[in-house]
Length: 314
Image (cartoon, rainbow, N blue to C red; front, side, top):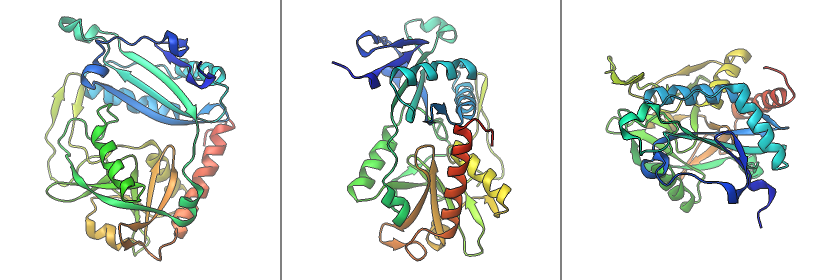
């Protein structure tokens, strides 16, 4: 017996679990050839939906996937899905794969598989916002020239392995650096902001800019450039909030020395919002308590969320 929170939308149809049928030849299942987005619904409003769909479409172009998801149509599907599952506040997952692999000679014409699912929204524990999160340095390396870097690909196992290692070390996240130049990239599931000694706020750029020239790699309709990090939607709004509120913020290449010298470290994503970091393994960040910048950004971002969820375009 299934409960109501198991309904999904598959290719535009609202389905109960027993009616869900994904082809065993689907490229997402066989090859991990897919993309996904994770976002929140607050008061039945999918937050930043247009931004998430725009990023999904852009990544699709890079991978030769023709993704055209109309924001109004997806919003209608999500409204139906949230109502079917009796959820006002939810974690939404949008997954798009290349579709059935059997038409190999006409792959560009293959219709993508579009799956929408929701689960009740479970925030991160309140104690983490009050006392700060501990993170580790991942033993794995970010590859700026890897074709999946900077995209939310369904080939996500490396991130999950690193996140499992972080949790085994009683930490909540792992920070990734590039190899061999050791530039800060991102967390497994988050973007990173540093508050420096001069009060400048810095975050890694999403494009890898350590080289004076960036080689281009044509992939059908898209263009793949070396990427350092995911262009996070919450990251994007935090940058805008900093500018609006007069906080000095910049995108720049950052090293482990910058990380260890930071007065504050802040993680962002759609589910955690603004998360203060107070320890990097045994290294204390600042005075080991969430700093004033993290507190202000958290307040502003939560206000922004509330404005969106009540129909205001902040």
